[in-house]
Image (cartoon, rainbow, N blue to C red; front, side, top):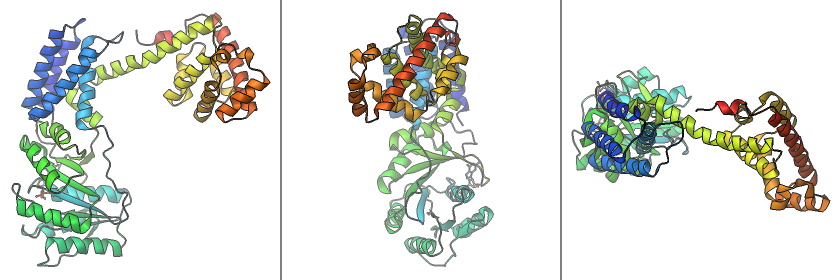
Length: 443
Ligand code: GDP
C-alpha cells in the first residue's frame, strides 16, 4: 500500500528540499502536486481540500528555523498534518468494560471480517485474555463453521453452533456463555453484506442493542477506494463504529481509504490486515504510516532535531549569563523547567558545558523530577527581588516562601544551598570557556 503515493510525493519534495529559498509560488506549486497525488491515491476530495488548507495555513505562518531549509520545513508540516489526518490518539482496543467485553465486527462480505475476528482473537490470546469467537452469519453457508475452524487455529474458544438460531439470539447466548465460563472478551462476527443493505444494518443494530459492545470495528478492504467513505459514514451513522480495520494492505491498494476514513468518520484506524495468516495483523501507528507515505524520515528527523536546538539556544543564553556570574534564581528556575521537559537529567547534562563536573554536582544535589517540580514551586513563591538577589532571603522571608510553596524552611535552605553550589560551579565552568558540547548542536 502507499507505494505510488509515496513515490509521487517523494518527487515533489525532492524538488522542494533541494533549494535554498522558496517563494510562495514554489510552495503553492508543490502543494498543487501533493493535492493531485492524494486525489490519485483515492483520498476523498473533502479530505484533500482540508488537508491542503491546513498545510498551507501552517506553511505561510511558519517561521523557518535556522539550520533547515524552507523545503524541509514544508515536508515536516506535511508530515505532521498527515499524522493529524490519520489520527494522533491511541489506537489500542478498549477492553476496560466489565468482562466479557464485547467486540462487534461489521463490514461488507469479503472484506476480511471473519479472518480479522480470528486475528484479533489470537492477538488477545497472546495478551493472556480468554477469548470466545461467535459467528452471527446465518445466511452464508458454512460461515459459522469457517469461524469455528479459525478459532481452532488460533486456539481460542468458539460458541457451539445451534442450527436455526437467529443472530440476536446467538449474540445473547455468546455473551451468556462468555459470562458463565469466565471469558474476558467475546468477539461477534456479523453477517457480511454485498453492499449497504438496510435490513442487515438493522439486524446489526439489534445485535448491538442486545449486547452493548465496547468496540464496534468496521472491517474494510484497503482497495475499496472512494466507496470506503460512503461505507464508513453509513455504518457509523446506522450502527456506530468505534474503530476501523483496514485489510489487504499487503496488496497494491493506493491507500486513499486509510487517509479518508479516519478524517470522515472521526473514528480511529485500529488495525491493519497484512496477509491471510492469522498473525498478519498490525497495530495502526499514524506516525509510522505517515513515515511510510512520505518516505522522508531523515528530513522529518532533521527538522525535529533543529526544533530541539531551540531549547539548546535557551541553554546557551543561560550559559552566557553564568559566565558573567549572573546566574540567578530565575535562571535556575528556567533550567529546572528544561530539565523537567526533557523528562530526565541526562538530556540537560549533555547540553551543558563542562559536563563531567556538572554531572557530579547535580548528582550530589540529588535532583529528580518530582524534586525539580517542588524546587520550581519554591522559586515561584519568591518575589522578583529575591530571585534576582538571593542574599535578601533571611529567616522571615524563608518562612514565607516555604509556606507559599507548601514545604518546610529546611527545603528552602536546601534549594538555596544548591543554588549556591550551582552558581559557583557555573562560574568555574564559564571560565573554562564556551567550547562546551552545546556549541555542537545542529549548525
Ligand atoms: P469476510 O467475508 O469479510 O468474513 O471475509 P473473510 O475473512 O472470509 O476473507 C475473505 C478472503 O480475504 C479470505 O480468503 C482471506 O484469507 C482474505 N484476507 C483477509 N484479510 C486479508 C489480508 O489482510 N490480506 C490478504 N492478502 N488477504 C486477506
